[in-house]
Length: 374
Image (cartoon, rainbow, N blue to C red; front, side, top):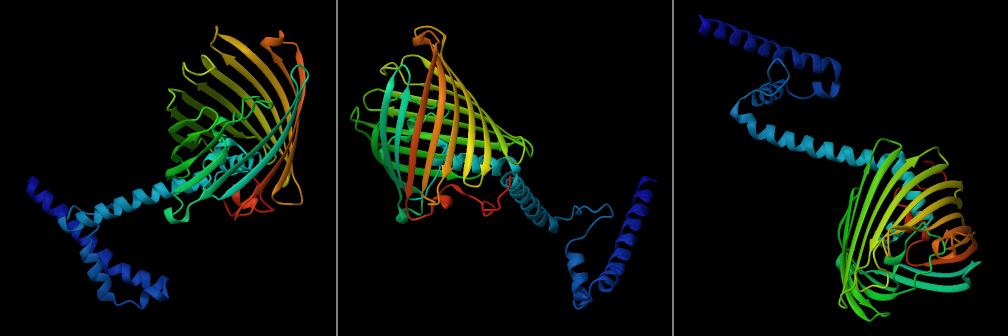
């Protein structure tokens, strides 16, 4: 009895399939003149080669198993491409790229493969420390014979750039070395840097990892991890977490947690943590403001707050596309001065030279033109 019912159902399925095969060429020819030009027997052969059930899924026929695997893998790759495209097209990613590029974020420089020569004279003044002048220069040359996978780097060590602490007085360190790019995508960036430092005259090597993902259209997360070992038994390990939020077409907010440990051989003992809240405002295409409040904690000689810093950073690109200047007034409250207000200011001029225009150096999408909007 069950066998008879099964045979009846099977006959009904094949009858509906046959009817569909007869009707579909007629419907296609009526709706599309291009399809009607194709021979009907070709449609029938294709239909027979890939039988379809009435529920729209591919049948269990063995001849279709290979095509099923191919189609599923194609759908998987397409879904990955769609997700990557959604991340690239997301408003928060476009905004973060503009902010990182225009305000010269260390992450943007570390991931760039463009040939670039940078000169950056700076003047600092603090009420307690007095005046100080710095001159920083660095060069990054993309080696064409390596397919853009290797860059030559020399000059100021950009690994020490701890953004968010305007007026950081860490000693400048000069290096020369090579940076090997292992992976570069929207979500992942991996590289390995090896070279020589001249201040302590020691060799160094270390990887860098960055992961980024969107959390909706208006927020994203980025995590960066760096390791560096030197031949004089000196370690430098940095961890940075950025939470990004687009507030409007002019305002972008970033919450940053940055931790650094430099090992027992370093003059800086313990673990240093910086918590920064930065609000970026796009004034025009060539000018922007950043409102920065940072708190620095330290674990040595005990767990304590080292200082609080309030800074207003104005950055402007001149009529020369390779020339920028900054004015950064700030006030800090530091433990070593009993948290008394310590007023200060930083003046900076930044010049870019290289085979590519400055805008091409930090713009990554074709949408970043003069009419670019978040």
